[in-house]
Length: 352
Image 1 (spheres, rainbow, N blue to C red):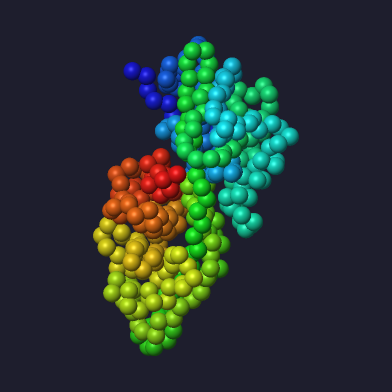
Image 2: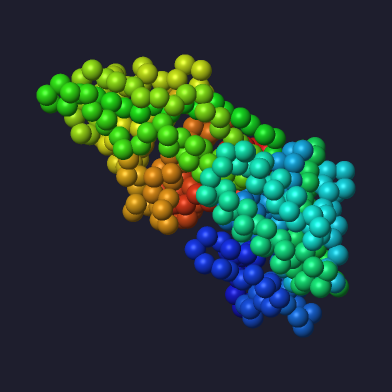
């Protein structure tokens, strides 16, 4: 039996190393995917950037309603595209459009806030789009714009075979979030910082969170407050759950949909080892170190923050349970996690 194609990488720089920038050949294991053989490399949809709302292994992508997303059609020679023109517009990104499209894409998902990560993502995207833009390139960069509702399909056909990509059209959702940073008393009665994080770190938090949720679900967070709070007690180096509810939660942001508390260390439950979301209060807490055993590649802290926000979004949908699942490598997994979502989680958090 032919092995399943590896959809993990797109053209361009993906963060740790240069991936397959020249998207001309395909491996033998890709050649038989859905019968698209024809004596040449198969056509396939792949993501340009990680966590960008393209889930090629599930033949699924998200597009913001009234906006656009990007997808790469690899090995596209002689491939014809068909789609619902009342809801989708699919255009090739030409050389003279690369700069504008890349800038618009990054601006929509990161806003105007400058950061090294924003610059890096722009470089990766521009590099990948320039690789697919020449007419002679074997891959095509597709700009997929959407209106209306539902999950229309893009069909890519060569000869008598085809591959399909479901396109979920997602309305935008916005939530207001506050960040509170704990100060407490030490044993001598002196006020000390309980956390290493400060309000100056909030722009970085939001850069990562709005890429994770904005790019994948069209859900964005706007800060309404970022400030220190002082509890005139010695709560100790690890904040207990009782102390958190009694002494800290009352400081939550009054104009916020959700408040994040940074408290240093916290006595979380076993199934929430590095944070906790309280649905009755619309608040959550994150420990300074995050959860290195569960997240990797520098995501240990921001991953826990995204995990708890995932619980908040799950709760806002009035879904049963906590939102935990057993799909390894996906946010909210009970095992190993990442900042990546999948089709099921996108559905749970948005219900397009």
